[in-house]
Amino acid sequence: MSIIKEWGLYVLPFAYLGWIGAGLLLFGAAGWISRKVRRGPIQYVEEGIPLVARIRDLVLRPTAMVNGQPSTYAFTSVIEYRDPDTGALVEKRLDSRAFSISAKDKYRTSYRVGEYVTAVYLKSNPARTLRLYGFLEVRPDLGLLRTEAAEPPGLLKTVLGVSLVFGLFGVLFWNIYSFSKYQPLDLSFAQTAVPMGVGGLVLGGGLIAWLARRQARSRRDLAARNEKALVAGEAVELEARKRGPFGAHRLVMTLVIGLGALLLGGLVVLCWCLTANALLDNSKPEFRPVEIVEFWSTTHSFLFREYEIEYR
Image (cartoon, rainbow, N blue to C red; front, side, top):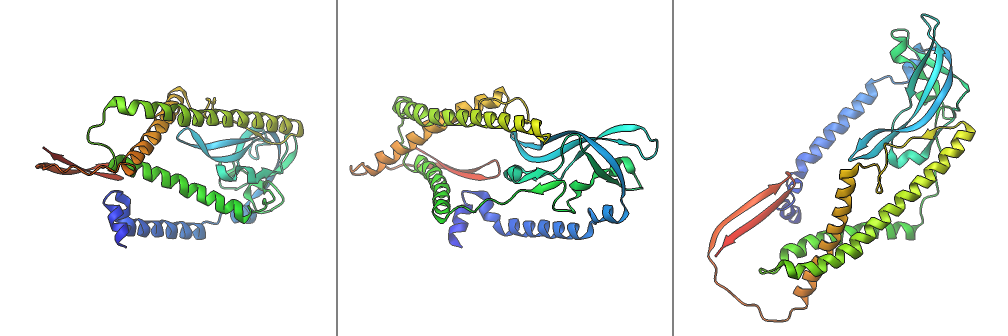
């Protein structure tokens, strides 16, 4: 499509969509073949040796972090059992299958702290192959359980949600377009200070307040859930690390988020002002003869291309 080729002049991945698609197909085929070749939990059913274990601790913990935020979770149990070779009483930590943060509330475990459970190991290497039988997911009523699926959202809610996402991206792209298209040739700092200051305080400050309030509510909900879980012997959810006002971020990232929100709010209002100035300006254009000295393009982060002209 011609529009895709035109976008490829500015956003580099659009110029290589064919190669990207071929690469994704190869990865998908490799994953499918890998799943077919591996025996997975069936090997434990056919060759596994059971033993009795007792759950000493049970938590839901993050297993992977992306940009300071947890991306995957897993249930982790600390079990106590008799070593099949020595007979000594030992402890071992065993994990369930990891699942994405979006599915965190869709899974629970049937295990409870203090109860006796079945663990399974392979004779070739008992210590490294030990698994909780319920975490093999060969029985839908034991171990890692999927909660009842919530009712799908109504049509109106779905339409509003999709419209909101497209609206946000539309505003973002329009801001980028207006900043490059409608920016005056002679624009001083004094002219941009007022709209950027107002935007930073109103939009940026509002975003910061919303993030802080959302994080505080999340902490309260987590504390309440963990209190109930402790009483019932269920899994306690662990935090990724000491949380800041906007999430599991350290001081530097917290400052970056706060200052970034203020700057983003200021730039959004500035772009709106540039758009209004261009669309409401009915004065006749003034033509000036110029001499083009040089023309060049710059690719930023292997993603975005910027074209610039030097003239006099």
